[in-house]
Length: 205
Ligand SMILES: [Zn+2]
Image (cartoon, rainbow, N blue to C red; front, side, top):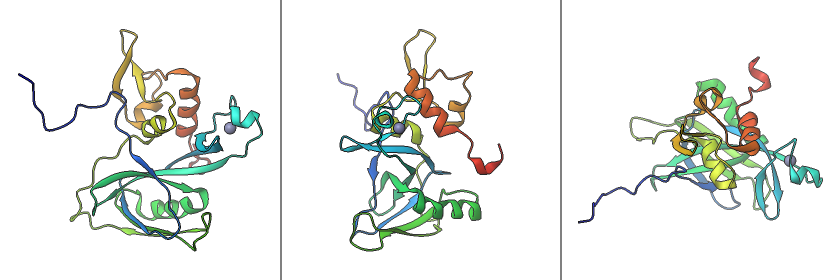
């Protein structure tokens, strides 16, 4: 007899989310599920966005320009879909202002749209606290793990088991910073974890 379940088995690498960018002519609305944004330098290289892996970065060695991008997860209550939003540094500044005002980004209802029909026109971002009594927000995913899947690089949050194989445990972001408990897999993961977890210059750490 098969063992029937009503939920798919967990993916060993964790589940990923669709990466969403604000496109001209569309208004994007959602409620942020992450406590904070996470950002790093990226390159547009061979037709896709890849993380900058300086000091050992192939796009950098080929003189490719880099840009900083921010990532936050959001929930669309109307479609019940959880997605990952990519924003430029200029647009992310609005979220930093919101975080300073409210202490967290989680529960921030936003409406994002381009200022005009140009692909690279400014993104207008309206933010206000959502009525969380009416929305059942999903738990905050581990954004570095999701990015590792999208970018096809080793997951900085996967630790090795005592047998030496890759464990399935997806650690929380704070656990990743605890290097005594977590052995990042390879120099890519180390560089990514270092950059994603580095204290921001503004917080005095
Ligand atoms: Zn680079």
